[in-house]
Image (tube, rainbow, N blue to C red; front, side):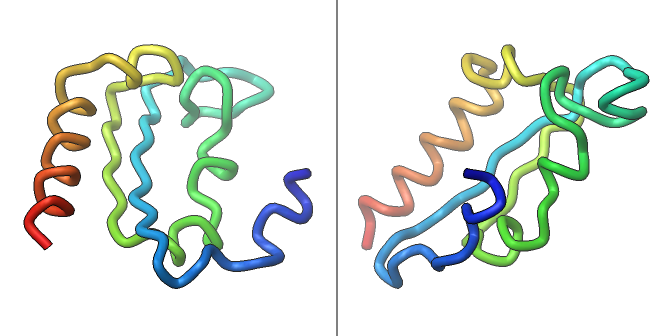
Length: 86
């Protein structure tokens, strides 16, 4: 799945905003910088970053707490507000 994930670009009318965190603890498998589940290398794939309209990185958030953190929710609300004003 991951090998082919970026074979086809997103449709031109799709806005993709990338939000991620790197607040995982250093791990011998995931490396020094990770989100607790994914490595920095996986999270910062060039293909994903290149397709994104915006990239928001919360260095202190991890794979689990990013979902309900007020910073994340605030960013999503901001994006939705910008979208609704079009």
